[in-house]
Length: 115
Length: 115
Image (cartoon, rainbow over all chains, first blue to last red; front, side, top):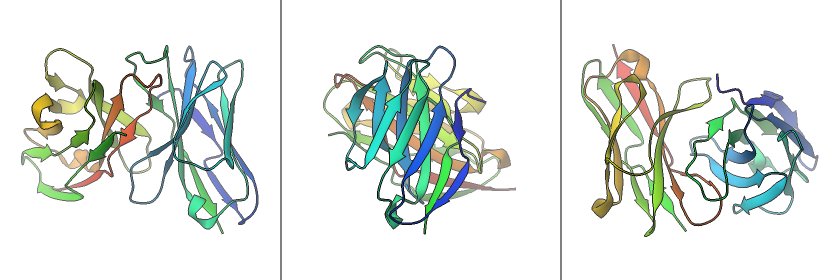
Protein backbone atom coordinates (compact mmCIF):
# COMPACT_ATOMS: atom_id res chain seq x y z
CA UNK A 1 0.00 0.00 0.00
CA UNK A 2 1.20 3.49 -0.87
CA UNK A 3 -0.90 5.53 1.52
CA UNK A 4 -2.56 7.30 -1.40
CA UNK A 5 -6.29 6.70 -1.42
CA UNK A 6 -8.76 7.56 -4.14
CA UNK A 7 -12.53 7.64 -4.13
CA UNK A 8 -14.72 6.37 -5.52
CA UNK A 9 -13.14 3.21 -6.92
CA UNK A 10 -15.69 2.93 -9.72
CA UNK A 11 -18.07 5.47 -11.18
CA UNK A 12 -20.51 5.62 -14.06
CA UNK A 13 -21.77 8.93 -15.41
CA UNK A 14 -23.83 10.04 -18.38
CA UNK A 15 -22.44 12.13 -21.20
CA UNK A 16 -22.80 15.85 -20.42
CA UNK A 17 -22.73 15.38 -16.67
CA UNK A 18 -20.07 16.55 -14.27
CA UNK A 19 -17.86 14.36 -12.06
CA UNK A 20 -15.63 14.90 -9.04
CA UNK A 21 -12.88 12.47 -8.11
CA UNK A 22 -11.01 12.65 -4.83
CA UNK A 23 -7.52 11.83 -3.64
CA UNK A 24 -5.90 11.76 -0.23
CA UNK A 25 -2.17 12.07 -0.49
CA UNK A 26 0.37 10.14 1.53
CA UNK A 27 1.08 11.67 4.90
CA UNK A 28 3.73 14.39 4.64
CA UNK A 29 3.43 14.81 0.88
CA UNK A 30 2.76 18.27 -0.53
CA UNK A 31 2.33 17.55 -4.24
CA UNK A 32 -0.49 15.78 -6.04
CA UNK A 33 -0.57 14.89 -9.72
CA UNK A 34 -3.48 13.51 -11.73
CA UNK A 35 -3.18 11.16 -14.68
CA UNK A 36 -5.66 9.68 -17.14
CA UNK A 37 -5.02 6.11 -18.30
CA UNK A 38 -7.14 5.05 -21.24
CA UNK A 39 -7.49 1.35 -21.99
CA UNK A 40 -4.27 -0.05 -23.44
CA UNK A 41 -2.35 3.18 -22.94
CA UNK A 42 0.12 4.59 -20.47
CA UNK A 43 -0.97 7.25 -17.99
CA UNK A 44 -1.23 10.78 -19.42
CA UNK A 45 -0.43 13.77 -17.21
CA UNK A 46 -3.44 16.00 -16.57
CA UNK A 47 -2.09 18.49 -14.04
CA UNK A 48 -0.19 18.84 -10.80
CA UNK A 49 -0.81 20.80 -7.60
CA UNK A 50 1.95 21.95 -5.30
CA UNK A 51 1.00 23.65 -2.05
CA UNK A 52 -2.52 24.40 -3.32
CA UNK A 53 -1.41 25.96 -6.62
CA UNK A 54 -1.47 24.45 -10.09
CA UNK A 55 2.12 23.59 -11.01
CA UNK A 56 1.95 22.38 -14.57
CA UNK A 57 -0.76 21.14 -16.89
CA UNK A 58 -0.85 18.58 -19.67
CA UNK A 59 -2.75 18.67 -22.93
CA UNK A 60 -6.26 18.55 -21.47
CA UNK A 61 -9.10 21.04 -22.08
CA UNK A 62 -10.24 23.54 -19.43
CA UNK A 63 -13.23 21.40 -18.54
CA UNK A 64 -10.69 19.35 -16.56
CA UNK A 65 -10.04 21.33 -13.40
CA UNK A 66 -8.66 20.65 -9.97
CA UNK A 67 -8.17 21.77 -6.43
CA UNK A 68 -5.73 21.06 -3.66
CA UNK A 69 -6.75 21.66 -0.06
CA UNK A 70 -4.64 22.80 2.92
CA UNK A 71 -4.25 19.17 4.03
CA UNK A 72 -2.85 18.46 0.52
CA UNK A 73 -5.76 16.26 -0.52
CA UNK A 74 -7.05 16.99 -3.99
CA UNK A 75 -10.04 16.87 -6.31
CA UNK A 76 -10.28 16.40 -10.04
CA UNK A 77 -13.41 17.84 -11.66
CA UNK A 78 -14.51 17.13 -15.19
CA UNK A 79 -17.42 19.07 -16.72
CA UNK A 80 -19.49 18.27 -19.81
CA UNK A 81 -18.40 14.63 -19.83
CA UNK A 82 -17.64 13.00 -23.16
CA UNK A 83 -17.49 9.30 -23.98
CA UNK A 84 -13.72 9.58 -24.49
CA UNK A 85 -13.34 10.61 -20.85
CA UNK A 86 -13.90 6.97 -19.90
CA UNK A 87 -10.61 5.88 -18.33
CA UNK A 88 -8.77 4.97 -15.16
CA UNK A 89 -7.90 8.18 -13.31
CA UNK A 90 -4.79 7.98 -11.19
CA UNK A 91 -3.63 10.24 -8.43
CA UNK A 92 0.02 10.38 -7.39
CA UNK A 93 1.51 12.14 -4.41
CA UNK A 94 5.06 13.15 -3.70
CA UNK A 95 7.14 15.31 -1.43
CA UNK A 96 8.71 17.88 -3.67
CA UNK A 97 10.10 21.28 -4.08
CA UNK A 98 9.86 22.65 -7.56
CA UNK A 99 12.05 20.64 -9.91
CA UNK A 100 13.61 18.43 -7.26
CA UNK A 101 14.34 14.72 -7.58
CA UNK A 102 11.41 12.90 -6.13
CA UNK A 103 9.38 9.73 -6.37
CA UNK A 104 5.65 9.61 -6.96
CA UNK A 105 3.37 7.16 -5.15
CA UNK A 106 0.18 6.17 -6.94
CA UNK A 107 -3.27 5.37 -5.67
CA UNK A 108 -5.33 2.50 -7.04
CA UNK A 109 -7.29 4.78 -9.28
CA UNK A 110 -10.91 5.51 -10.08
CA UNK A 111 -12.37 3.54 -12.95
CA UNK A 112 -14.67 6.10 -14.61
CA UNK A 113 -17.10 5.14 -17.36
CA UNK A 114 -19.14 7.63 -19.36
CA UNK A 115 -22.24 6.25 -21.08
CA UNK B 1 8.35 17.95 -25.32
CA UNK B 2 9.63 14.66 -24.01
CA UNK B 3 8.29 11.31 -25.18
CA UNK B 4 8.84 7.67 -24.25
CA UNK B 5 8.76 4.65 -26.55
CA UNK B 6 8.28 1.08 -25.46
CA UNK B 7 8.67 -1.10 -28.51
CA UNK B 8 7.46 -4.38 -27.04
CA UNK B 9 3.70 -4.29 -26.63
CA UNK B 10 3.23 -7.86 -25.45
CA UNK B 11 5.96 -10.24 -24.38
CA UNK B 12 5.35 -13.91 -23.57
CA UNK B 13 8.04 -15.89 -21.77
CA UNK B 14 8.38 -19.17 -19.96
CA UNK B 15 9.36 -19.23 -16.32
CA UNK B 16 13.13 -18.95 -15.76
CA UNK B 17 13.67 -17.20 -19.09
CA UNK B 18 15.62 -13.94 -19.15
CA UNK B 19 13.79 -10.68 -19.73
CA UNK B 20 14.71 -7.44 -21.39
CA UNK B 21 12.13 -4.73 -22.07
CA UNK B 22 13.14 -1.80 -24.20
CA UNK B 23 12.58 1.86 -23.35
CA UNK B 24 13.76 4.88 -25.30
CA UNK B 25 13.05 8.49 -24.54
CA UNK B 26 13.44 11.73 -26.43
CA UNK B 27 14.67 14.74 -24.52
CA UNK B 28 18.01 16.48 -24.80
CA UNK B 29 18.36 17.62 -21.22
CA UNK B 30 18.67 16.02 -17.80
CA UNK B 31 16.12 13.37 -16.96
CA UNK B 32 15.03 11.14 -14.14
CA UNK B 33 13.99 7.67 -15.32
CA UNK B 34 11.58 5.17 -13.82
CA UNK B 35 10.10 1.76 -14.36
CA UNK B 36 6.67 1.10 -12.86
CA UNK B 37 4.76 -2.18 -12.71
CA UNK B 38 1.01 -2.62 -12.61
CA UNK B 39 -0.20 -6.02 -11.47
CA UNK B 40 -3.79 -6.91 -12.39
CA UNK B 41 -6.19 -4.91 -10.23
CA UNK B 42 -3.42 -3.18 -8.32
CA UNK B 43 -1.90 0.29 -8.26
CA UNK B 44 1.22 1.37 -10.10
CA UNK B 45 4.30 0.38 -8.12
CA UNK B 46 7.80 1.70 -8.56
CA UNK B 47 10.27 -1.00 -9.62
CA UNK B 48 13.35 1.20 -9.84
CA UNK B 49 14.52 4.72 -10.58
CA UNK B 50 17.54 6.51 -11.92
CA UNK B 51 18.37 10.05 -10.81
CA UNK B 52 22.15 10.22 -11.21
CA UNK B 53 25.35 8.25 -10.58
CA UNK B 54 25.84 4.58 -11.47
CA UNK B 55 23.87 3.98 -14.68
CA UNK B 56 23.12 0.41 -13.65
CA UNK B 57 20.34 0.53 -11.09
CA UNK B 58 18.85 -2.31 -9.13
CA UNK B 59 15.26 -2.40 -8.05
CA UNK B 60 12.85 -4.62 -6.23
CA UNK B 61 12.06 -8.25 -7.08
CA UNK B 62 15.38 -8.83 -8.86
CA UNK B 63 14.85 -6.24 -11.60
CA UNK B 64 17.58 -3.96 -12.87
CA UNK B 65 17.89 -1.32 -15.57
CA UNK B 66 20.75 0.34 -17.40
CA UNK B 67 20.75 3.98 -18.42
CA UNK B 68 22.68 4.52 -21.64
CA UNK B 69 22.71 8.25 -22.20
CA UNK B 70 24.16 8.07 -25.72
CA UNK B 71 21.29 5.83 -26.80
CA UNK B 72 18.58 7.62 -24.78
CA UNK B 73 17.67 4.20 -23.43
CA UNK B 74 16.69 2.72 -20.07
CA UNK B 75 16.05 -0.98 -20.65
CA UNK B 76 14.64 -3.19 -17.93
CA UNK B 77 16.17 -6.61 -17.29
CA UNK B 78 15.65 -9.64 -15.12
CA UNK B 79 17.82 -12.76 -15.45
CA UNK B 80 15.11 -15.29 -14.54
CA UNK B 81 11.41 -14.43 -14.57
CA UNK B 82 8.70 -15.97 -12.42
CA UNK B 83 5.00 -16.52 -13.05
CA UNK B 84 4.31 -13.74 -10.51
CA UNK B 85 6.04 -11.23 -12.81
CA UNK B 86 3.00 -11.32 -15.10
CA UNK B 87 1.94 -7.66 -15.23
CA UNK B 88 2.02 -4.45 -17.25
CA UNK B 89 5.33 -2.57 -17.20
CA UNK B 90 5.66 1.15 -17.82
CA UNK B 91 8.76 3.18 -18.46
CA UNK B 92 8.51 6.85 -17.47
CA UNK B 93 10.68 9.94 -17.69
CA UNK B 94 10.69 13.18 -15.75
CA UNK B 95 12.46 15.91 -17.67
CA UNK B 96 14.10 18.25 -15.19
CA UNK B 97 13.98 21.99 -15.52
CA UNK B 98 10.26 22.40 -16.07
CA UNK B 99 9.56 23.14 -12.45
CA UNK B 100 7.33 20.15 -11.82
CA UNK B 101 7.64 16.41 -11.45
CA UNK B 102 5.46 15.54 -14.42
CA UNK B 103 5.96 11.95 -15.54
CA UNK B 104 5.73 11.05 -19.20
CA UNK B 105 4.90 7.37 -19.62
CA UNK B 106 5.35 4.94 -22.45
CA UNK B 107 2.38 2.92 -23.68
CA UNK B 108 3.43 -0.06 -21.58
CA UNK B 109 4.50 -3.64 -22.19
CA UNK B 110 2.26 -6.49 -21.15
CA UNK B 111 4.35 -9.36 -19.83
CA UNK B 112 2.85 -12.84 -19.65
CA UNK B 113 4.83 -15.59 -17.96
CA UNK B 114 3.86 -19.15 -18.78
CA UNK B 115 4.41 -21.63 -15.93
